[in-house]
Image 1 (cartoon, one colour):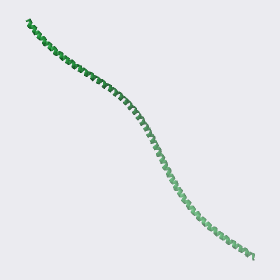
Image 2 (cartoon, rainbow, N blue to C red):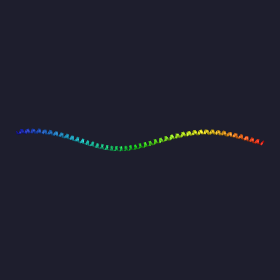
Image 3 (tube, rainbow, N blue to C red):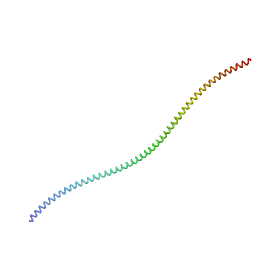
Image 4 (spheres, rainbow, N blue to C red):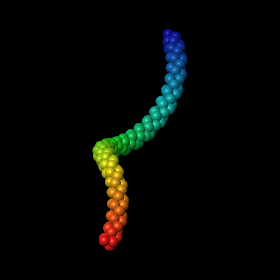
Length: 167
């Protein structure tokens, strides 16, 4: 029985060896797969590191962009403040121009009233001048008549002197 047992044991050992060889082949295949998986994980890790680096670069750029936007916002706020000050000044200028316009309209109304008065005064002066010219014409006529009367009186005087000398 020993020999049969040995043969059975040997056969079992051969089966076990075959199984071990199959298990070893499977382990080698699993190891190869693990090596492939490890390589893939290393590639994935490298890609993640690249992605992380890119994200860090993007974050840095976003921070730079944000800083620029904050500076732009500050400038826009300063520009807005200046525009509001300019608008306030323009409103003050407009108010002053409206007051000036009101004063100019009042001055124009006064000048129109003064012009109307001057036109009335001129009309009166023209009427007075016409009357003075008429008076002058009458005075000239009166003077001419007086000269004629004087001449007649001189003639009459001369005639009287002649008549007196003949008496």
